[in-house]
Amino acid sequence: MLHRGIFLRRYKRFFAEISSDSGEILTLHCPNTGSLKNCLIESSPCLYSLSSNKNRKLSGTLEFVTTRFGNLAGINSAAANKIVASALNARVIQSLKDYDTFFKEVKFGEENSRLDFRLQSSKNLLPDCFLEVKSATYDIGNGIILFPDSVTSRGAKHLRELTSAVEKGYRAVLFFCVQVSNSKMLKIADNIDPYYADTLAKAVTAGVEIKTWNTRLSGDEVTLKDQIEFSY
Image (cartoon, rainbow, N blue to C red):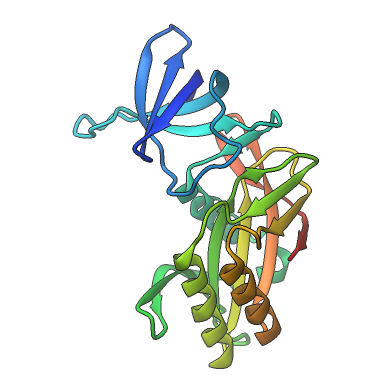
């Protein structure tokens, strides 16, 4: 269940303070390692969840914030994998619907990596597909979202592994899950991480596929909504 509050501040990266509807000041887990550019707006509306696990250090998690441009952004980066997994189960991603089995957190490559998903066809008519999910939240207005919002050496490593998968005869997909309302286009922020942008361009040339979808929040459930434009 999601609760409404007012975002106050983030500190030490993983902590966020919010004011609940009752006026209580709560310290929540901030489940995102990125810079969250344009997402941390003081005194803006937010949504959070509470846990029944009494062994947790923090009782809740900051889930959604309001961006500088008034859009709702899902900042729980782990949620992106759950959203995509649900879509894979429901086979709503048309280009991947012929894969009927998938495995999570699969070891692959020469850099000791774990890729988010390995998709397989039980009929063995398709090559296995390695799929890596990235959550994008950097809202710059007019429906445009950027990725990444900070330098991501881990993201570049995943791109190298996806490229390696293609070279070995597999299919490889980089999936951007854009968790910002009213998003229409994703662009690569080459000014923030030029090495990532260059590595991505090489990966696409090698045959790595790019999928870019925005999301829909309905009640407490977040699902994939539509494919949106991609530019790099």
